[in-house]
Image (tube, rainbow, N blue to C red; front, side):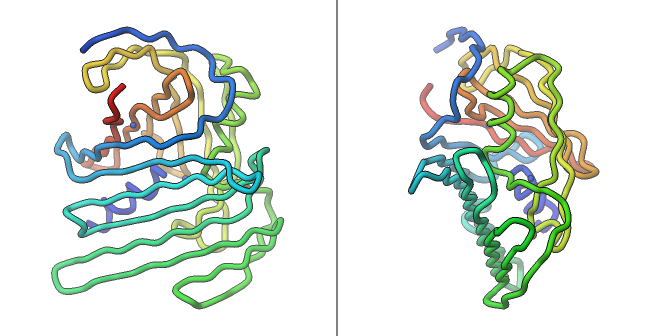
Length: 231
């Protein structure tokens, strides 16, 4: 269960018609719902919300798995040019005999981060430029007009993975591919993403830049997030 939960957190750091893959012109705002599949078996639900509040992007990811055995709520706040402001992660995991709550809040002020973990506060200093894993990479794809073969690398800060260090993240836009989501055919944008040493993550975006499907392989486990909205 712990490995599965970590995989989901990393994915943060998814009638028949054919739709063309137009270039997204702006970061999408709205709410989208997803199914979580583990090795092809449905195991939970997820929701992505992206809004603009107080002239900032607020990106939210909520996940429930195993009838509430695992729950997580992530919120990432960025400026409109996707500079880091704040990150919150709230995770609940129930195992056979134990329950665990993890609450993390990271307030960003340049290289200085005020980190609160289960009410314990500390100051983290990063000596490398970094972003949060919210809208930044989509923002850069849009700025570069979704040019095929485009590769973007940046350091991401996520204290649930590394508390006092950044994580190198690289995405590559490989082009378009036709995929089926809820019996709808999409000519989707295909992105390959590596997070640290994890190199098997594939993300498909629709013409508005919204995730249609995301897949990651870790050891003998394959995790899919697939959009289930009425499209």
